[in-house]
Image (cartoon, rainbow, N blue to C red; front, side, top):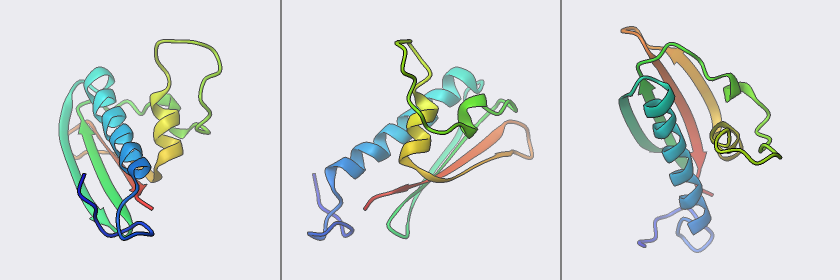
Length: 111
């Protein structure tokens, strides 16, 4: 893996990259499984992290998107995505798109 500015040794820590990949995976998977399909994806480096935007085709706001980030204590097949997103990212916003669907924006710190 190539190092990039950001960590104490001048590179991004592996844990931060894993966190970023988890957030991307959860947002895209949710758009496909629960949002009537992925309508757009953008990522940009910004102030010590990555800003992500995922757009889907559903107007429904996920009920768990405004949760505490607490991981479910009982075993179940799903329900871990939004708690992970909440724990690993900041500045979460969900807004309707002009042509329908919604946009979910998050900031994932890399340091």
